[in-house]
Image (cartoon, rainbow, N blue to C red; front, top):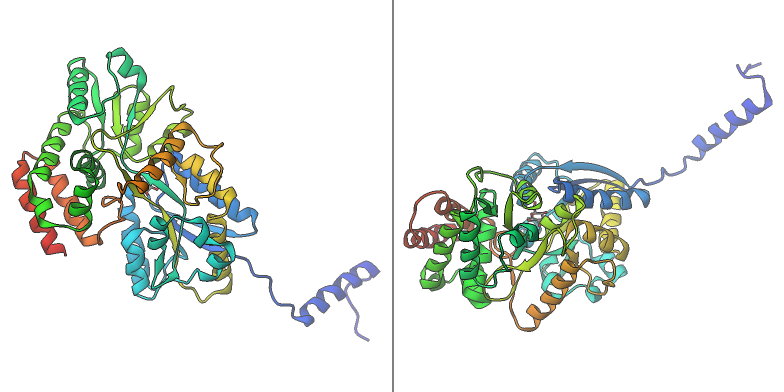
Length: 423
Ligand code: BGC
């Protein structure tokens, strides 16, 4: 007779249960899993990314973090390309604007139509964002937020001490900067990395030329606009700004510039509202420790929406993870938690405003006004308007102008040439 090595009744029952489960061959429970490639690594950004991870895990998902440091996401794009070439794309990728279309055209992106239908995305997203998320009528990306690029951040203590008021024109800005400089204070906290220089450049372009000029030059790549008087003036102002940064500006990360602003080592920073995420993460209070105002000059709103795409996967757990993540990203609870930490405003248009601070409320109002009077424009520097190669041409010329004694006339000539080659 066969003898079991167990003698107690309880042990036998346990063994029987284990065997029965094995024999019934119950299907394994799916574990929604995603590997997420993103570039949210600064203090404020990682707090916000952490909120997404927590929400995903609380819903039963397994999150594999794949962060790539480097503001603006240029380093992350390089990693993405090499992972795709190696046949090992991450499942969920932070990706924007025309890049979404490019990857969709390669047939690499999963359709999010089912989630979109179930969650009513069409009804909650503004047309401005909606169009970018679709390819040939199908949803291939899910938006997280709307960042405004053209913000000027001011340290009110430093401004108060120097007897300055908020500049509304570039002449007022330059006058304030000269006064600060004469008092031994760095007027502008800035890090010269190509994407940061170009971010400032597009803000100056909007301020000096207005939304129509911005669209002609930085979206439609109209040659007259690229080489005309207004563009020369934009480079003239960039040259002025070069004189307002400190000696250590070269290759400084954007969040270190934000630290200079909050510590009073510099009076101002020109940066998108992810800078507010950084200020909030350090416990700073809007209206008291920092002011958020639109970049000087003509009014308008430079739109930069973060979004995620899901690379097709043959694995059931991964597909389940992708759909769960897409659903959560546009859920009202996540939209509120994430955007209050990130500095942006919700991509959804039906969110209550009460949890958002005065800068976010201003952003919501200004966006509404800009849409109504046609002065909302897509960011070139943050990959919302032109193909990658053309953006690269802008980055090259703007940065080499900022870091040399190139004249404005030379810069516009080089810009037009580089764009022609990149088109
Ligand atoms: C992204 C932001 C990010 C910033 C700095 C922008 O292009 O849209 O989400 O915080 O770059 O890395």
